Each structure stands twice: as C-alpha cells, then as structure tokens.
Amino acid sequence: MTTFRMNVIVFVLCLMTTFAYADPFMSYPGTRAKAMGGAFVGVADDASTVWYNPAGIAAGESFDCVFEWMQAISQDTKLTTEKDNLFQYGVDPDTLNNDKSKYFFALKTSDTIHNPDIGDVRGGGALYYISPYTIDWYYPPNLNANNKAFGNFREDMNIFGFALAASSEDDLFKYGATFEYINIKFDTDDLYLLTKDLYDNYDVYRIQTDYNHAFGFSGSFGMLASLYSNKEQGVNVKLGGTYRFHSSCSADTGDDARTSEEALNMEVSELIKDQMVFRKPASYDVGLSFSKSFIHLRSAFLFAGQYGITDWTKTNNAIENKYEKSSLGAEWQLAFKNGTRIAFRSGWYLSEATKPEQGWPDVTGLTMGVGFLLNSDSLGLDCTYEFRNISFEGSETEDISLVSIALTNTIF
Image 1 (tube, rainbow, N blue to C red):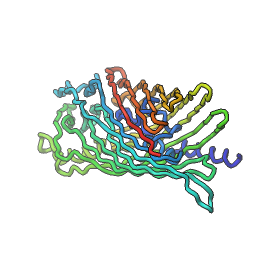
Image 2 (cartoon, one colour):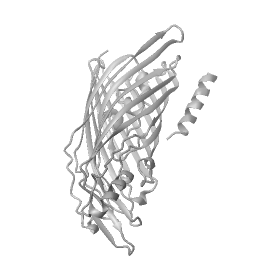
Image 3 (tube, one colour):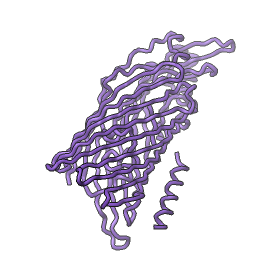
Image 4 (tube, helix red, strand yellow):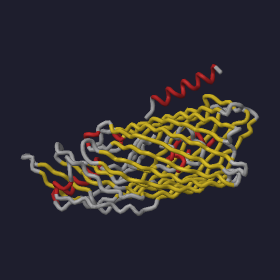
C-alpha cells in the first residue's frame, strides 16, 4: 500500500509539471465523452479513449470498434469583434457553409498478457481516424503592428493514428501513448494583410495563396490510476492525466503567397509562416471519476471532473494566449433483464482565454446524450447534442449546436 501511495504522488506531480486539448474551436470525438462535457480523461473506458487518454486502452479484454458521425445543425458564422470589425477595412464577412459531415473511426483491442517473469499484465492497441468538426474563428488585426496578417480561419483536419497501452503487474496503473499524422487544409479566402505607414495610415490587402495545406506529426501520453476499488460495494475511483504534444505541422508558402501590392509579396510569405496557425497546441488534462453501482436497482452512476490547459503560444510567433478548461459530467445507466441497457448523460464545460483582449473568445458548453447497449452489451448506439456559446469580451456572441451519432460494437 505504501508503494502504491508513493506511485500516486509521483503520478500527480508529473501531471502538474506538464502542459488536454481545451480547444474551443474543435468538436472532439466520442459521443459518450462529449455528452459528459468532455470530462473523460479519468473515465477512459471505451474506444474514444484513444483521444482522451490512451492509457484506457489497456482496460478489459475485448475487441471494440466505433463509427461516429458529427455535424453542426445550427449556423456557424464568421466571427468579428466589435472593436476590430472587418467592415472598417471594407471586408464583408460572409456566412460560412457548414454542411460538411465529420467522422471518427476506431478499432481497439485489449487482452491479458501472460509473462512468467513479471506475471499477468494487460495490454492493448488501437488504430483510429479523426476528422473533427472545426468552428470558424476570427483572428483580429493588431493596430499597433506595422504588418499583421488577420482574418477568418477555417480548417479541414484529418488525423490518422495508432496507440499502445499496458498496465502494471497489479493492474492499478495503466500507461498509454499515441502517434498521429495530421493533415490540415486551410480556407484562405478571408485572410488579409494590414499595413501601417509612418503616419499611422492603414491599408488592407487580401492575401492570395495556392498553397493551403499543412501536415506533420503529433501524439499523446496518458496515465490512469485506480485510487480505490471495491467490487462488493460497487465503488470505483480513478485518476487520469493526458499530455498532448504540439504538432509539427508547418507549411512553406515560399513565393506563392501574394497580395495585390507587388512590393509586399516577398514579405507576405514570411508573415504567413510566422502568424498563421499551422501547428496545433500542446496541452494537458487531469481528470477524476467516481462510479457506484446498485445491484438491486440494476443501475449505476458515474461522475467525472476534469481540468486542462492548452498552450497556444507555441503555434506561431504572434499568439500569446492559453486556454483553461473545466468540465463536469455525469451518467446514469439502467440495465434490464433481457441484457439491454440505457444510459442518460449530461455535462458542462467552460474554456477561458488568458488574454481575451487579444480577440480570443470564452466558450461555454452544455451537453446531453443518451446511449443504448443491445445484445448483451455487444452492439450500442449513442446520440449526443452539444450547445456551445462563443463569447468575445465586451462584444458579440455566437451560439452553435452540434450533434453526433455513433455505432459501437464489442466483438468479443
């Protein structure tokens, strides 16, 4: 017990010294996780754990697959702040087209590994593909800068990855890691260059570039600890943490980037590389979960909380912002005599920018969902609704609704 407590202390200290993805512009995968407000790092017990906490892959003995469809069902509009409105530069921010469907697909397997030297340990692996829905966001001009790229950013992101995980001999600790290839396509139709002369006169030029792709690599490392488990009482308490590395995505625009002013063309390419968001940020999440089952009532409750920070300062030379995200989630599951189960879920989260005065919004989300498990837990259907409010400090707000539907199957 003393060794276990020491491992927990070391585990928590390691998490406190690192930098999950409190990205207010992305819709994460996993209908169940999203329905719980994204508070899933300390739960990590289904296929979506490849994104939230890869250590959870080592739990159980099964082969699982999931296919998820996600879509925004309300209007996603291009954002502008009142202070730095694009209209003052003669730019009309049109409404975005939000009819693109996005997907998440994962194959996860886990089993017990029999090793005569160290005993029985659990191990697992997964392959996955994520194409998240990304919300258009406005990057404001800096009126104090002589030359500044600004405008509306929109990304079409594709992530391919694999994960591996293993447990300790006593199964109290689990460790996992992922490796990802990321491809991002940028919508560059609404990017502009703001220039200021010695007399503080401003000119705006639309940036034109035929090179609108970035690609690179990223990954994550996760840990999951069982703090307390009592099968007779049906109580389980878990602590989890995930560190996500910043991506290496970059795009060499060369001499391709240009404006209508030929004299600026050479400088535009360097400005884009320094100021556009090609790389994805580093981040960490720490989460705690508590579950309690009631055998006589054929039901179980799950509560989870999570805190994370995303460091956007490493994405380019112009951003000086970080995001703090807090999430709370709950699940109530009912079982029937025929083996069918139904689960009701709800969640809340808040993402706050450390420097909202730079034009970065605060985001509040409310989530809810329902899930069905059929055929003795082998086949499942999950549905989630997410309401997200994006609010700029002292100016406008935007509301957007997102839905996702997932089919899950446990083959054995």
